[in-house]
Length: 194
Image 1: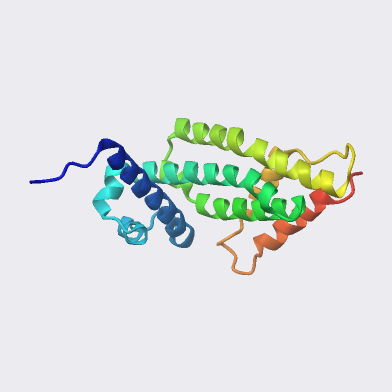
Image 2 (image 1 turned 30 degrees about the vertical axis):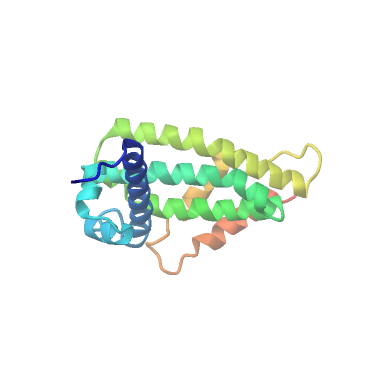
């Protein structure tokens, strides 16, 4: 006699599997690019290849899901880092490190979407709507901590674009230290306002 598994437990198991796949895919993509073999992701996630295809029938669906998963994780980290870090500046620097990690995984997204302009546009909107407010809050807290009062802080959208532009060379030039460049950007953002 077979035991039936309650639907709520099946859903919880499916969510855990999906989260494991997304986390594993992010790690594999960061190391080997978005064209990495699905079997590598399955091994890292501890699931079968069929589980991945059941959740994400195409590579582009998997890449988009990883992108969205990482955007949400990065957004969720902002308030947590502000609450748990010794200073707002530490929270900002740790959050920026997470954002840089996310950007490294994002490379290759355009190729994976292969001309799906609507998907690319929707992802950009999701990115802006989700991350810009979090960046703005963490950045404002760090600037206010350094310069009490009504000191202006950089525009969070421009700040994120600046970080993105500094990360473009990552992976192409072994001598390029994007984290150093981004660190200098953060220091500049926290410098005394003009």
